[in-house]
Image 1: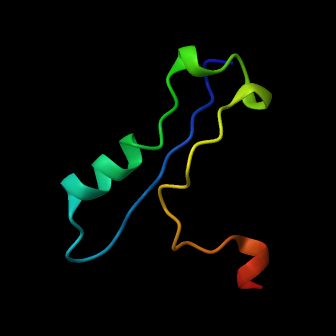
Image 2: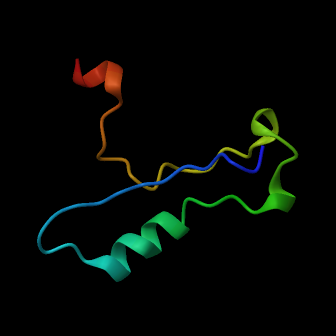
Length: 57
């Protein structure tokens, strides 16, 4: 199991790295908030302007 990971890659000009990092950090769920995916609290979407894949098709 230790050989698995997820990565996000951002490529572009003029990216505000501190702001992006702050928004991504805002997405993190504290380990104490939920024992698993089914127990997650109803947090607001920090990226509300993004469309979901099924809406973009």
